[in-house]
Image 1 (cartoon, rainbow, N blue to C red):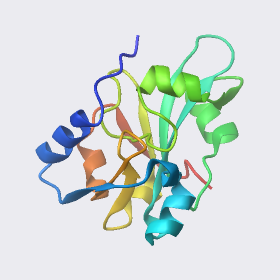
Image 2: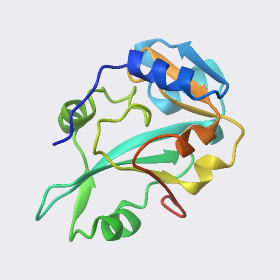
Image 3: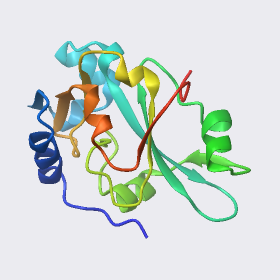
Length: 163
């Protein structure tokens, strides 16, 4: 069973323990969706990332968190489906995301995930000097060196996870 932990305090602890440069920035919760956030606050979508929870639809229910750049699309029907060894997969609902990850859409982050939840990071995430992630709630974002994903548990860097 996957168990959610407290957010965003746990995220701040993870960042502080990483020895990487980071910044936690406040944002208006009404402006937290990636495209709106980037447009309003002047950040490049090319360094902004989305954490997406995906679930198998048949057989044993499995979840995986996937991290992709905002300028790409998660290859859910090919790469994710095959890696999960599932006949069908879908994006988790907002309710499932809230229950599994303890976060609301617009604030979902790839940091401080529940124990046992795999994280697949598209290899393109590792290319910029810094990336922007959700802050664990709709009122914050995190800017951090993508090297953080060499320090997070259950993380795998996946080539071509996104198109």
